[in-house]
Structure formats: C-alpha cells, structure tokens
Image 1 (cartoon, rainbow, N blue to C red):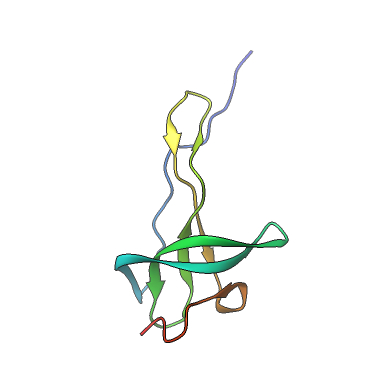
Image 2 (spheres, rainbow, N blue to C red; image 1 turned 90 degrees about the vertical axis):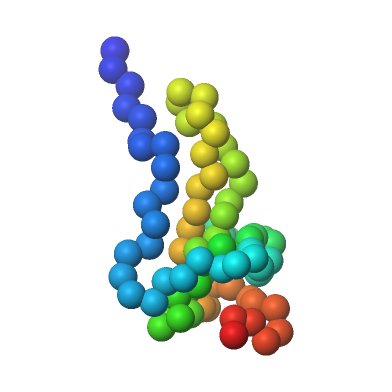
Length: 84
C-alpha cells in the first residue's frame, strides 16, 4: 500500500505587491464558514489581500506545519487604520 503526503511547506504568494509585515497583525478572518482571529503575516499592497497563519498541524510524517491562507479584502476585518 502506498500513501501520498503533500509537501510539508506552504508556497509563498506569487506576483507583485506582496510584502512581509514587520510585526504580525491580528485580523478577523472568515474561514470555514465562521469568523476567527488569525494572524496576518503578509499583505499585498495592490489587491489588499492578506496571508494569514492557521493553527499548527502535523503532517503524516509527524512534521509540524503552520498552514497559511490568502484572504481577499471581503474575507477579513482589519483593525482600524490598517493596513497603512
């Protein structure tokens, strides 16, 4: 029996406009049909999308992985005055 395991890393967003935040910012993100507090670690200055960290999980090999998701502006609520 053969098992398949996804790569144990997330690809960074591709394209222009992405920058890593000096300090992560907590935003309210709409994920899996509910609003959650998540940490935004990157922002796209052109599209206002954010890349957020999700809770750490273990892959099939036991390696810890921090999954990420890109949220469009309609899927997150930023603190007042952010991003600037």
